[in-house]
Amino acid sequence: MKRIIQMMLLATCIYLPAMACDVCGCSASNQFLGVLPGYDYNFIGFQYMNTDLSSAHPSVYENRPDEHSRDYYNTFQVWGRFNAGKHYQLFAFVPYQYNIHRQDSANALRSGIGDISLLVNRIFLNKEHKKLQQQLTAGAGIKLPTGSHTSLSIADKQGLPNMQPGTGATDLLVNVNYTIRRNNAGMNADAAYTFTTTSKDSYKYGNRLNAGAMGFYSFAAGRFSIMPVAGVRYEYALHDYDNYSRKWLNEQSGGYLLYATAGVQAYYKKIGARINYQLPVAQHYSSGYVTADHKIESGIFLLF
Amino acid sequence: MRYILSILLLAVTLTACQKKDTTTPDAAKVTISITAPVAAQTFHSGDTVHINATVSYPAELHGYEVKITDTLTGTILYDDAQHVHNDHFDISDTWVNTGTQATTLKLELTTEIDHNGTTAAKSIYLNYQP
Image 1 (cartoon, rainbow over the protein chains, first blue to last red):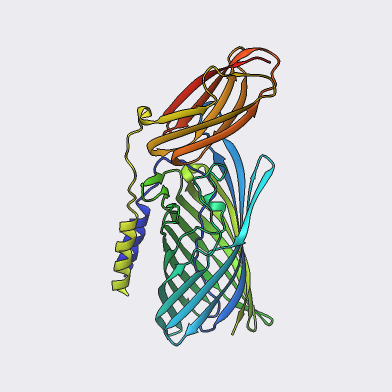
Image 2: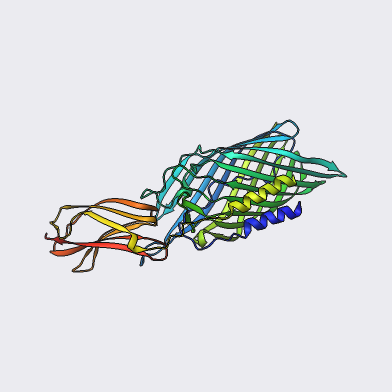
């Protein structure tokens, strides 16, 4: 098992990005689960996620300076988990995107309902032995092209594929999530991989990996249960295709980001809240033309 | 579980290989047609210059630039650079000249074949009489 996971990570890591080109923003949807609230409960929650990026847009023409922009990705998301019997968990994610591209004091705003994702996970392991609790789930899902998406081959829409609320394509999602806990302390490791497909204009976002490892410790503070978490997250994206059927590979897209992350979850009865802050510690995205500043994720959820 | 992970590993490995169009950039294969204005056409102050052109190529192009230069002073009077990706462009621009000096204008259409500076260009010259 350990060897398989190591090989899997190696296989995704060895494909390093080559020289690149079309820059603008970062990954499209990159859903992952991480440390989840109340394992045996259903929940519904509201999340806010923010990612700030700085981009340099190299001119394709000589004697023109690079243009610089800042991209602000804001996702407001309703999501939930429903336990279907003893062995299955159903997840649903309904995002609303509010993305701002700021260049030369001019703002370009793209907002709207994003791509809805649905996941089904099977519980492969859920046992407790000598105060050691372990849970292992894995499953698959689909990301539907419900968000608005326009053709990218038209002048004045150039370079902004990631700013759009939707990708215009149906993607396959797979994930694995493992948690081990002894008394109040534990660790969580998860990995999610997105197999992308082409949009109707033949644009194809690169396949994406999102993996993380987090440690946590829970303690009671009055009527509250508090759980600080800390760890690392790794995001990797293959190059996009400007036209997949013609194999027009955009070598200036894709790359990796490694974040150090810290946060806290708090529970009061069946109401929970959490906030996470991610700071990049290593990155090479869009051939270095895109720099991630930070990520913030916060949310509330109701267990039932 | 091991079986599932093995399938996943195989799928990830296969999809991590990215094929790409290996067409060698060749400026000679670019077709640029400037249908308007026509070479040596004369314009006067306040006239609208309608620029219509097409660009085509067997593989991916990475953008185009339409530029009008005053050959007398070297001043760039009009410049429209578009970073778009396609194997053909249908270009339709307009420009109004309000210069006060008679000169010859150079209309140049350049297209980017790759991101390493390979370009193809076509120019025509126009007369300007204020």
